Length: 275
Image 1 (spheres, rainbow, N blue to C red):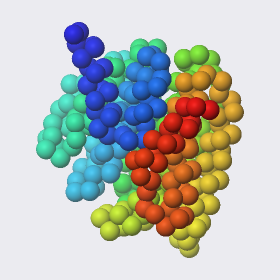
Image 2: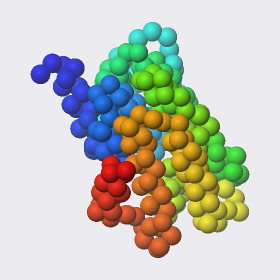
Image 3: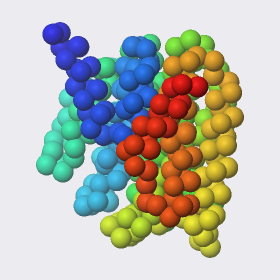
């Protein structure tokens, strides 16, 4: 097995270990897209694991995120050695997906790697700002800003990838809404855990849980609109699966249950495949 083939296999393994929601739809994509979206997901998950770390000091998080941003945004080839030196002191604290960020970039096809780097750099910078703000969200505008950096940007990056792959053109605003909708569902699902474990409440002042449900629904509707511009079957499948899972998760929570069962997840995936 070549080094590249081994790296691609390891990327898929780490992807499976880190994402229940996206692993399945990524594996349904054709090879160039599978490698690109898989790589992009792992890169963004790498920086997200720094932002989300429950025990790491905030000042260290900010430094790691800002220096990662600079390395990703720099012209020319990514300096994997400098990144390795940056994270090496925290090897015991950070997961494999973060430690191996340079490897995931090597999996990404050359023609789109620059765009993926730019989007991940922007995410790292935005996350650093929110760590400095201690994730205090006062207004809906704050919530929009936070959800843009942790999820809306993923939508923008995916739109760039679809366009690179086969010329598919999609609306960036709808892409951002799609990402925001998925993140709002995560906020609702993890609300009590986030507050108990991190003392963080990603909800604007004066909002009730019902208001967050409304915010999630409105943005997931933008996700439905986003799909109307896509005619490539595998891309449609990729987008539909997390969208439908999010919509079903909202319904599940409204019924008083914490999350969907594994059987229900599989049921949704099969329904989407048959459409």
